[in-house]
Amino acid sequence: MLLETLLKQKRGEIGRDDVLKELELLSMLWRGDNIELKTLYVLSKIYAETARYADAFAVTRAATRLQPNAPESRQAQDAASALFVQLYLGPKGDEMAPIDALGTFYEYRELTPIGRRGDEMIRRLADRLVGVDLLDQAADLLQYQVDKRLEGAARAQVAARLAMVYLMNRKPDRAIGALRSTRIADLSGELRQQRLLLEARAQSDVGRHDLALDIISNITGREAIRLRSDIYWASRHWREASEQIELYYGDRWRDFTPLNPSEKADVIRAVVGYALAEDAIGLSRFREKYAPLMSGDADKLAFDAASKPVATSSAEFAQIARMAASVDTLDGFIREMKTRFPDATARAPLPDPVSTGSVPDMPKAAPVSALPAIKGERRASAGQ
Image (spheres, rainbow, N blue to C red):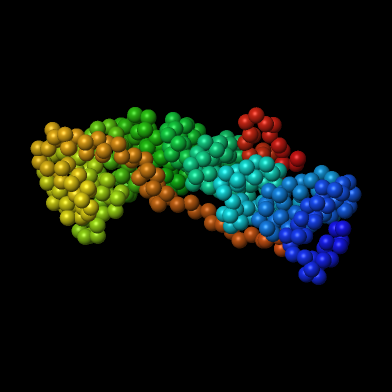
C-alpha cells in the first residue's frame, strides 16, 4: 500500500491531501516493521511541507522510538532538528501563534541545540511571549538563562532584558534583584547605561525616588530626561517633573505639526505640574509654546482648563489633574528604552530543513539544559 500510494503520487494520479490520508491510515493499521518506519518518515516530510510542525515532530519521535538506528529514523531526526532551528531562529516561526510556539517548544525541547544557539533560541522565544503579554512565561525562560546558562557580559545583557520584563509585569523588586545579581565591572558603555536606567526606574517604582535620581545623575539623553520627569512626578515634585518634560521636547513647539496623543498627554501633564507647583511663569511660558499645537476639541479644553492662571481650586482642574496622575508613565519609559536600545540580534539565514534535511553545525555541548523545568514535570535532558 505504501509503495502503491507513492507511485500514484509520482505519476500525478493523486494529490498530496489524498497521499496524506492514505499514509495516516496506513500508520495506524501497520505496526512494527520497516513499512511503518518508512510511512512515518514520509509523513514527517509532508507534515513539515504543510506547516504541521507539531505533527512532523510527533511522527519523528515515533520513528526514533521504533528503530532509533535505522537510516530513515536518523534522516527524520536530522530534518526535525533543522526544522526546529528554523522555527525558533528563522522566519518559519512567525507563522505560529506565540502560545503554540511555547507549547511546541516545551513538548519537543529535546530538539533544542546545545550551547549558544539554544540560548539564543530561548531569548527569541521570550521576546515573542512578551509581545503577547505572556510575561510570567517569558521571565521564567530568561531567569533560567541568567541563573544557569550564562556568564559575564552575556549574562548581564540578558539580565537587562529580564529586568525589562519584570518592570512590564509590575515586579520592580524582581528587576532590581536581576540587575544586582549580574553586576560586573567591565561592561560596555551602552549596556551599562541601559542597566542603570532600568535600575533607576525599578527603584522609583518601589518608592526610592532619591536613590533613583542618584543612579542616573551622570546619564544624558532623552530617555534619561524622560525618566527623571517620571521620577519627579512619582515623588510629587511637580515643578521639576514639568521642567524635565519641557526639556525633553525642546524646540518641538517650533514645529507646527499637531501633537500626537502621547505628546498631548505629556504636555497636559506638564501644564498640570506647573499649575500644582503654582509656577505662574512656567505655566505662562508653556501655554504660549504649546497652545497652538493642541488639536481636537477635548484636548484643547483640557489644556485650556489646566493652564488657566489661578485655576487649581476648580473642580474642572481637579478632574484633569486626576487624569494626568493616572497616566501610566511606564509605557512611555518602555517605549523609549526599546527605541534607544533595540535588540541587536539579527536573524541569520538558515538552511531549509525540508529541502536539505541537514542539521546546522552545533557548538560543543554545555553541561546544563537550555530550558527551565516545567512546574510539576521532571526536566528532560537533551539526550532523551
